[in-house]
Length: 477
Image (cartoon, rainbow, N blue to C red; front, side, top):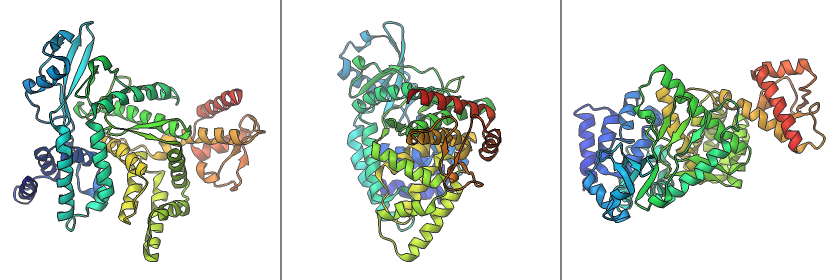
């Protein structure tokens, strides 16, 4: 009954009171509970079919970490059940005013006996019990009002809804989050420094001996979250540096076939940036790991799109369902447009655009594509706030070039600095050369070096960096 009352109230706010889409959805989600709040957070980070203006996204982003807090005495019950009546003896001090209040937990600043500042994250009571009920209500909402709004295209239908339930369940599982903090901490240590001129991914230390299924104690991060930062020119540049470094490090890990891990919920209330442009992740409830087959599929898909091989993309998509000839023609045209535009669009659009194509034709994409869309849609929203419109080509081309050269060295037994095959022409946009590639005599052929610099717009400095990378690679292999 509450669902229908809140829907009616939302309609009145929109039509009678003339409130913005963002305000209406924010109020609706806050009144309905955690599932709706998490969904609204996703909406806050992507401009779905132009339904949301910049002011709408500002209104929606306020619920990322600014939910009405509960009184400390309610939170104290959880602390007592976790540590006992003398829980305060474990800490020098606990500030009873929350420094963060989100849909799943509240966060307090405290000090350990050794003087270390920490954050105590306490789960809200009964949050798990309410999730299944909320999702059932959301299913009813989709079924009842689906004829007025195409929810399938909006969210991906029931398959996506099931994944959505799975994601929220993972986010509310503190045992899972404690493990994620350790896993992502190890991943960040491995990838930091792997790409030149990037800043660091930073993960707070978790204190397992003080953590439980209802409480997590971790290092206190003394930096404001992105949604709390004034968007000055300086702050925008810091945020751009941090986000773009994260993207480069993550994509480089993907290309290198490492154990690839992406943060699953990097909205502006979960991210901090320091004065050096390092990025900090505060909430580790949701991570997406790609297995070997998923990595290969993702790379095949990405390179087909990056090289404008729309026929290959079309072939892959049509494996996931049956289409009429008319639908196939429309789909092929749409995929061609998608491929033509990819290199000029932000890389954060890549997975969401692909999922939208699948769901438009009522095809269920591989689950990992939904995961990756979820991981990147939030960053896309942060990019809109900060005018971070760096294209896929500009952001990744040097990483891709290095990967291609390494790949060719690896598969060419007789490769040397004076004999390196450059693979396929479309990847580097070498339109003047044949599909079979060419022998790139980077060390000796000044004319060819000049051609490469001109064609892919890469600096002389980075050509030298690539040469050093090749030398290092040959020395190790």
